[in-house]
Amino acid sequence: MRRRAAILLAAALVAARAWAAVVIDAPAPPLALADIRGAIFSLDEPREGSLVLIFAPSGQGEQAYAWRDSIDVEAGTRASESATADRRILIVSDLSRISRPMRGSLRTRLRERLADVLLDWDGAVSRAWRGEDRGRIVVIGVSPDNVVRFVIRGNATGENVRRAAAEIERMAELSTMREAAALPPGARPTVAVADLRGVSVTSDEAAILTDRLRVELVRAGRFQVVERERMNAVLQEQGFQQSGACSTDECAVEMGRLLGAERIVAGTIGRIGRTYTITARMIDVGTGRIIADASHDCRCEIDDLLGGMAEIAATLARGAE
Image (cartoon, rainbow, N blue to C red; front, top):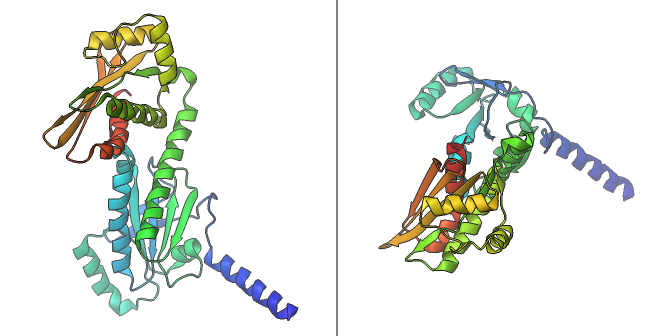
């Protein structure tokens, strides 16, 4: 009985090793394949964004397209505009079981679809990445430094797609943190965030959205952001007469000067009919010049604006570079 159990365990371990060709948080295997137009994609080429590879067995092209489209939708709703722009999704099609007479018609169909598909004619790359698990789609996330960050097997179910979107978001955050860590201390200016001035929204709602904007600016990794508690303490000590919100750039600059910040973010959140609108601007405290601005409109419930703060922060960070 024990011998049989040991044999079964050994067989399971061998199967697991065969299936798990890539290892999470380990360097990715080599990859260099051509698409239908003959353009070569290689991991050796430098890139800034994360990569999602959808390894599709022969005959499962439609499921691969479903994966790609579902990730675009789900991840796009979670990520900031910059993270979405830096992400690339590629389908790797294992064509080793396609007979040579059928390859011509396959090329024609792929040209008609104009699909972003890499063609693995002998299946060698697919085997190196997904092992011998050749009956299911395997989705693999690769960070910009070519490290495998996640592996998901199976069809594009709601649970699998949500997990993939969350992992893509985590890859973007890890990439941002690495970039920020590489910056010298003097390259990250000190930024204060004044409370967004509310128009047709409550002061509590404006304060909550301001806090989220502050958090998203920290996540952007480009700034040293002054904490709200420190802001309140310093402004009270200095006898600053305004509330946490400023209606003019002069007021914002004075607030930033008292806080010792190099830059300050100010703006408004308002509602017109059923549409909420947010505007924000980043001001150089020394010169009073607006160095970046951003806006976000949403015909939605006010709590949906929390997600829009990532877009505002990303736009301000890009404009301030």
